[in-house]
Structures are given as C-alpha cells and as structure tokens.
Image 1 (cartoon, one colour):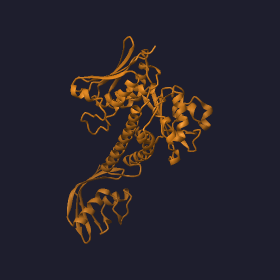
Image 2 (cartoon, helix red, strand yellow):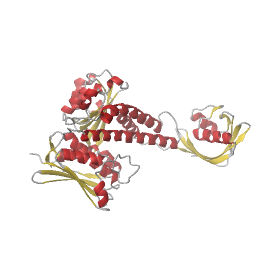
Image 3 (spheres, helix red, strand yellow):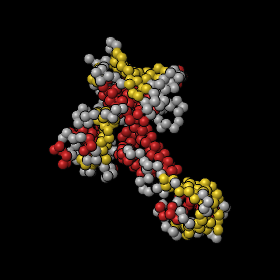
Image 4 (cartoon, helix red, strand yellow):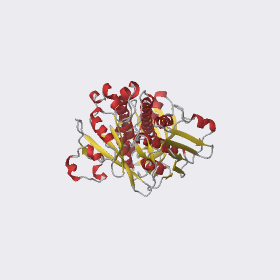
Length: 463
C-alpha cells in the first residue's frame, strides 16, 4: 500500500479542464489512465470535480476514490477556481493494489457474452444430446427444426465441424469455440459449449450457443408466413400472435443482446480502467437487458398459450428423468446460494403424458423460483407421487412461504406479490399453470407463512 499522509499533492488545470501540471503520484495516475501531461484530465472523478468547480466558480472539497487498473486510490481533494482554470490539492493519498480476480472470472464473462449474443441456444444432457432448442434467425431454422425433431441425438449430428468432423465423438472442450458450418446459412458460426456441473464436480449437462460475428440482416428474420413454425415454441404450437412472437421478438432480441454484451465489456473493464461506480452502472444496464429479454420470452410464450388452437404434444415422458434434467440445468445457480437440490434417485421412474419441452419449461420455472426465493444454505426437494391415473411432482422449498391471500393470487397474470427488483415479469407461474392445464394436468400451490411453499405439477399417468 502506498501512503502519502503528510504530503500535499498539487496540480493545475486550465479553462478547458486540461491538466497542465501535477505532482507525483497524481502525474503517474494521469498517465496510467491514458492521459498526458499537459493534456485532458483522464481521471473521470477528478475531471468531474474540476468541471463543477470551474463552472460554478466555487471551491469544492470531498473524498475521492479512483483506480487505474493496478491500484485503488483514495484521497481528500480540494479544487478552487483560479485564473480561468483550477488549483487542485490532494491530501491523505492512499493507494492499495486491486484484489486479484477469481480464476474462473474470464470463463464466466465469456459465457455471459456468448449467452447474450447466441442466435441459437440448446440445452444438452451429459452426453451432449439435445434436450431443448430455441432459435429466431431464419437461416438457422432448418438446423433448429432438425434438432427439435431429433431430441435425444448428439447436437454434432446437425452441423458440420470441418476438420473435426472425422474425429467424432468429441470431448466438449474440443467443441467449445469450434467453427461450425450450418447448412442453409451463409454466415460463419462459432459454437460455445458451457458445462453445468454437479455438487461433486460431475457434468450434469451443457448449454450450447451458436454465435456469429456477422449480424442478422432484415432478410434473415422469420417471414410472416413461416412465423408459426418458429422453433422455440414446440411442434404443438399452432398459432402465434403478430405482436411479439412474429414481429417484435426477432427484431428486439439481437440489439438487446448487443447492449448486454457491450455493457458486460464495460463492466469487466476489458476496454481499460474504470471506476467502481461506473462498472456497477454498466452491470445494472446488463442486468436490465437480461430482464428485458426474459420479459420478451415470457410475452412470446403467453401469446402462444393463449392463441386459439394451442395444443401441446402428448409425449410419453419420465417425470423423474425430467426432474433430474431440470435440476442439472439449474445446478450452478443453486450452488451459488449454497442450496441443496434433493432429487429423485437415478433408479426412480414415473411415466407421464405431456410435451417433453413444455414439462421441462414448467419444472425450470418452479425450481428456478424456489432457488430465487428460498434462503441460502437451505434445501429444495423434488418429490414424486402417483395414484391410479395421475403422476405428480412437487417442488418444495424452505422459503418464507405465502399467506392464504397471496397463494390465491400467485397464478394471476403479471402477479409479483409486491416484489420489486428481482427482474421477474409475473408471468412464469401463469404460463406454467396454463401449460399444465393444456396438457390435461394441473399446477397447484400449498403454503403457509414461515413454512415454505410446495408447488405440485399433476399430469396424466403414462403407461
């Protein structure tokens, strides 16, 4: 730590807020922030205070915190108007090294950016077999539809891997970052494969992102007469409203994703040193963008399920297997809060009737909510039961619970029970119940204040 407790550091600026002279260590800080001496003030916090002092014609004094990518600097600063510019005095200068970044931070940043920019996203099981796929770009529609029809097959069966094609099967590390060729698309594509790890470090599944450096042009948007074939809503979706699903969603996704990626670049200081408050602001922008994308997804889903003729497919599914898959997808989020997911045993099975992707969507929503609202270092349980003709799975948390009045409103459209700041749209449970009922089932809630909450998905039992 560098300390200049008893040293008065002086500097001068001119009428254009250029730093014309500066004592050490302020001169070094100016250089580390990309400035020159003399030259425009490159330290944002100092530049702001100097501009205010000169503009108001007042002496200003306050503590200041800045950083140069190497150290965090704290000092007391006094700025006084003088001869068209300002006289600058700093005292109690303390410089401490920036803390080291976590070893996995670079990987997490890359995953966040890839997730935001992806034009095709797929969930894979531990064997890299396709579970779900979502896509909006028309030049990826053929491969997305093929994946949707081929759920359970390796994703590499649907793309060309160039020089890697002759080396199948491939470890996911060889595929992460690989260039892939998509039949029917003229754009170059890169695959990102993000593992989802269990409590013991085992691989539970993967997220697959296909991204391109070449942006989607207007001709790449899904034509209106093909909108009801868009992959994302599954094969059972017969109609889609023109407002969100057909027209706005494809147009909005890419620019919002670009905003998120740029904000993440700023937040992570990949373009140079940045004060903490500005990095936090960029993080807020990225988070708001993620919430907006989630809202677009929810509105698109709502339009689909409320459309006349909506009818999910009647697949034969295993609720126990789907519960384990959903928990694997959300395992990282649970571990970040120290939450234990109690899952059905690998030998346990519960046949049911319902569309594979839609049941997985409901379970992801229920488990995700339980993780979000249950305390840290607690447990979320997935419990299976059945009777003569019904198969049931319950998601039970140890959260604060709901009052009887709240429980009566929890499935209402846009209902958020007074919560603010968590980014939810208030549509997740509404959509989940509509889906359950469309599949011949039901979604119910049991809860008491202080005793956690149980959501139960009920479906027709399979043979």
